[in-house]
Amino acid sequence: MRGIFRFTKIRLARLELLFALSVVFVIPACSHQATPPSESWAPKAAAAYLDSRENWWAQWIVSSRDHGTFCVSCHTALPYALARPALHKVLGESGPSTDEQKLIDNVTKRVQMWKEIDPYYSDQSYSRKTEESRGTEAVLNALILANYDAQRGKLSDDTRVAFDYMWALQRKSGNEAGSWPWLQFDEEPWEAKNSAYYGATLAVLATGIAPESYASTPAIRNNLSLLCQYLNREETSQPALNRVFLLWASTKLRGLLSSEQQNDIVKEMLSRQRQDGGWRLASLAWTWNRWSSRSLIQMWLREDGTPITGKSDGAATGLVTFVLQEAGLPRDHAQLQRGLSWLMTHQTAAGSWQASSINKKREPTSGTGRFMSDAATAFAVLSLAERQITRPASTSTANLLRPSRAP
Image (cartoon, rainbow, N blue to C red; front, side):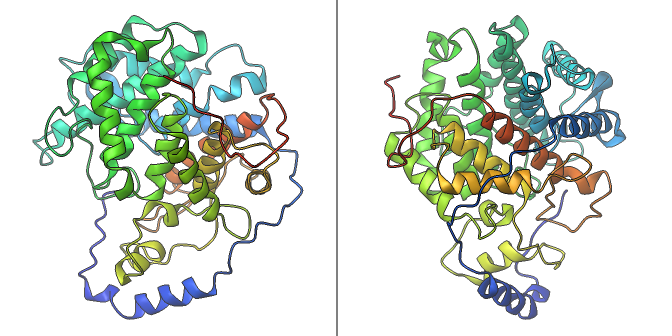
């Protein structure tokens, strides 16, 4: 996952652009006709897939780090940590699975040993990677621990320490004030040039879901203000995928976005729904630039020149339908129903949902080839588990979102 998409290469100039254009213009326009949703999916199979993949990741030699720990990835470990608890109630589980507990223990250990443990990547092997690794890990650690604390309604001492380390590494000045140093490997969508914005939305998520009203802690007021200013300041320059995470974050921290801003993102996501009812990751991850050849190539060709499928995928569809529900889109909204139907009809026999790298073509059955399917399965689980939560029935679709409440 360390590819660099270089558009100056001659081999991506003519034939590939022609291919991209041909693909673009044969994709039919999105239809918003309602489709009766399927009512079934296999949560037990999804749990088994997620547990097996987290177990693989924890034991993979490439993931191993200092003091017998392993790193946390944005495609496998983090989505797993966010989604697996959603299956506890669905499956009648009393607590974390064995693989969940191993991840929690791993993160806790790295927080407790923060001052002596090596970063994920160091400057000795990569330029500026110590700073980037620390910033990235600090946010991920706080989010994972806060998410599990939220299940039991009590903020642990280890989570408080994780937040302290997170805020200490926040940038306080310059154009990126409010954000964190973030791992840059030129890999879309979570290790790219604009991924610091994604990381900042995760910091809001962590703060907003932390129990015991952590977001109201006086000591972090200035940090939180700086973070919100950054997210609002940089919003318009972000790809759609980052804006989806921003919308999600805004549902956990009241006052981050106005109702109008939330509605704008909701409408944008609905306008990007595809004819089959799903969404496509590549179309959300890249920043559109006025029909330029670069934008077209990004959306349809990987760095190795291989075409990216034009079909909807589980990663984009799972994430978007989940966040739309979190944002308050009525359950009877036709487009949301179609998106959920897509998810319930695209779960594989292995329990997963499929998605593929938009950077390089990989063997889909290999360990690395399943990375984006790991994220797809986690987001699909979050969406379908959310669908099963009992909520008051909506009688109108005129207002997309719940009214904003004062912070």
